[in-house]
Length: 105
Image 1 (cartoon, one colour):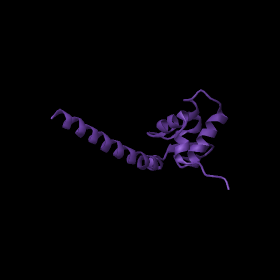
Image 2 (cartoon, rainbow, N blue to C red):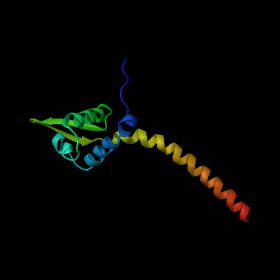
Image 3 (cartoon, rainbow, N blue to C red):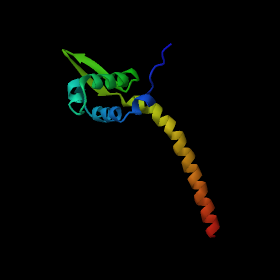
Image 4 (cartoon, one colour):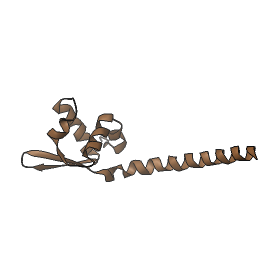
């Protein structure tokens, strides 16, 4: 059984993060996306395949062109995961602040 890629694998690559950012506000053809990166068409296609496979980009074929748009809802998993650490570190830093303030009193 082949493991499905997940959103964390997709955003681990800076090029894919840049592609998501590029598509966050507008729909672009795959050629328009490629025009923003200095790499071959096969490399762009591989990145886009990974992004679509994990649900961060949706591609729709219109005529002869593939139009791409970001599906930012796919990042909710990352938000939930990072939120637990944000809460943890805020609590730890608040406790440290309380400790330091108690020493000053």
